[in-house]
Image 1 (tube, rainbow, N blue to C red):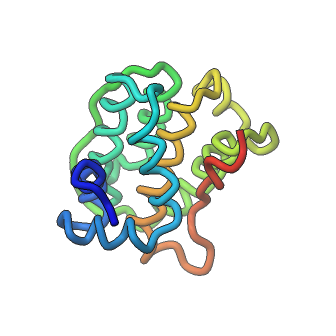
Image 2: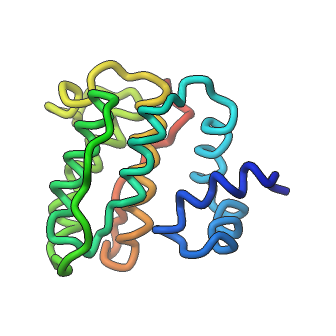
Length: 165
């Protein structure tokens, strides 16, 4: 059973799942959310900068033509641990999943502590801290869930976070 505080924290997933009740239902079934929520609830590593960046992640809308640019911007925010604006909604871009596939695979690999396949993203993200890993995992989960209907047979990569440090 989720506490009221946990339920309140799940509201950040409303852009992915819809209203609060759907977020709670998702958290009770979704293994990734079950791993991400306790870190946020119990960690001193989540400072105001990280919470601001998490809020920007909730602003990413996959229907926007600038989604890839927004994703790259959020990854840069995580690297600098400083929140910045993201663009609002616009027209759907049919090639979005293909454009994001390599970026999200690199992000998931980085969050899992890997160096192969990460490329220049390690320069963008910098030191791999628990807060940065959590934020990257939140971004990967958000995009994978939002683009689930457009991914075909191969979903976007998600880290196995927090299994690997």
